[in-house]
Length: 334
Image (cartoon, rainbow, N blue to C red; front, top):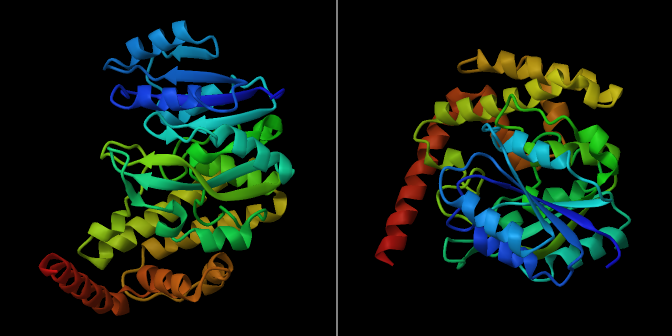
């Protein structure tokens, strides 16, 4: 236990669950850590709770922000406080299993990795299991297994859940500053992307976190497109996400290897063009293919139809909704 680990917890109005999370960290089998908490101007009792914990345990340091930063800037502030070789990220409303820190560090060292992230168990507000595997539920595990330790891991979309991260601080100069202009590129996305471009990454299939979903999460398991009634809504979301992602890449070109910068620009221009097309589009198909060619055939075709062939996609989308409706009725009757 000679290595001190900096654990970074960004808080905001977390009075309902933050005590349980802090307790789960303090009860870790690996005890050599600093718990750095930055509170982003909470208006509930979070501040009082944190002040009491800071008095009780010398490993805890709390920073109270004078103005609201937002969760990305709040994590950025904490990243700048790192003094040790290793750091971890924490949400304010989860529960860590007692051996999370110990097993995470052990896994990172065993794999000689710069950056490790993992799977987790999704639970409800009462910590009852909803999904045994977040990676399976979000259909990420197969892609992660295929592209771990390559620059394709997070390039097209995010595969990282921030609260599972343990990493070396040697890549912070590549990670900071964090982009903030797009909500589709949160802090964990950017940290994972930069780490996959410049360091060695590894993935833990073991689950050491109860990932709580309670309706007020900043980032959770919700699949927004599941509630849409029209294909146009799905296309709007898909295009907005990609414009946010590749717009961020273009605005931060200096952060990318030179050989990737051309594709960043081409992709951003491609999705701007797609945004203006209503029914059919085959222009610049080569750019789409370059971005999606390593995805599964289903994901490739689905995304192409939604964004480029909505005239064909609309009747298929209606049929899908009918099937889902009948399935739900059957489940209720059952």
